[in-house]
Length: 204
Image 1 (cartoon, rainbow, N blue to C red):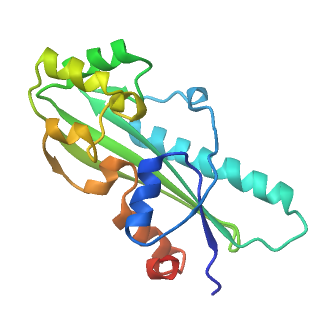
Image 2 (cartoon, rainbow, N blue to C red):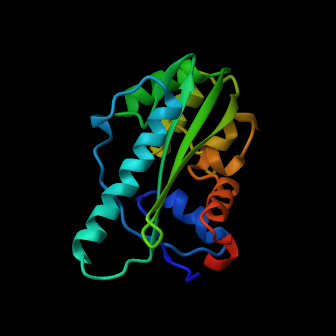
């Protein structure tokens, strides 16, 4: 089987770095999908649908531009949300919201859901899976929260923190896949590639 080009349908620098860490250098094509158009209260379904929509947006564009050609691209779409006390959180809108969220998250246990969608154009196959990791947040005082939010790191992240950045200072432990919290479960990606007939080493 010919190894396809891997396209990352995301502008996330964290996801790109994760892939590059294991030797994968994908083609980056942000989907710019409007996430506000999808309203669901089930976090697993929400991230799966959003990941699928992002990947499908790029797939449609590729099919349209190359309608007469045999396509061999493999498109990866991802989406993450954090759930704390049954409330779903994506990226905060501004600093005030980020401060409010951290006041709620302090000392709590959150569930970080990441949806993963792979569209294999060569085989006309579509695979969508979700992984959840529990995140135990340290008790954080208002001064620490305000200082962290002032770095603007939380404004760029689903769940209002980056475990691969300054946010690691405020995480006591996690239960589950570490890279899933960053935005892409590498172990789940390997399983998904195997399901489509590929080895992850083919892309490294």
